[in-house]
Image (cartoon, rainbow, N blue to C red; front, top):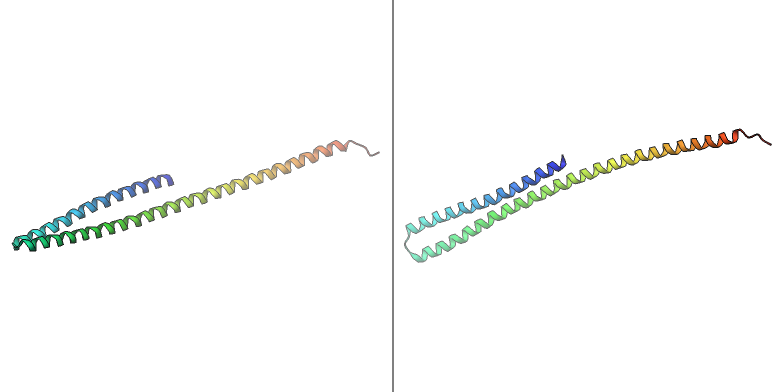
Amino acid sequence: MSDEKSILEDEYFKMRSKYRANQLIMDEAVAKSENYQELLDTLQRSKQSELSDRLISLSEKLQSMRLGEMRATRELKEVKEKNDYFARLLRTSTETVKNLEERVAEFESRMNKREEEFRRADNERMKRFFNARYDDLQPI
């Protein structure tokens, strides 16, 4: 059950990574679209080439800053999810180890009880054997 859960969590983690990558691509496309639309509106209103060049460079800088911010927030979310995933995985593994240790202790206890029973039975057998051997002898 825990193996299936780990596999499912792993698949979920991979799917979330793909989802984030696709979101990043979409955000980039939306930002570029907004940027180009703003540039087009500005260029249609003014004819001065120097102003247009400056506006274009500032717009590209702004776009790259926005994209960098989006990437940083997505990477932060991804790192947090990885931490949560590994914490859950560690917790599951720790619980499994704890359960196995409890089972080992239980089996060792059973084994010790059985050894004690065999030891008692052997002592009784040896006692009967030696008593039966010397019961027939008469004192001199």
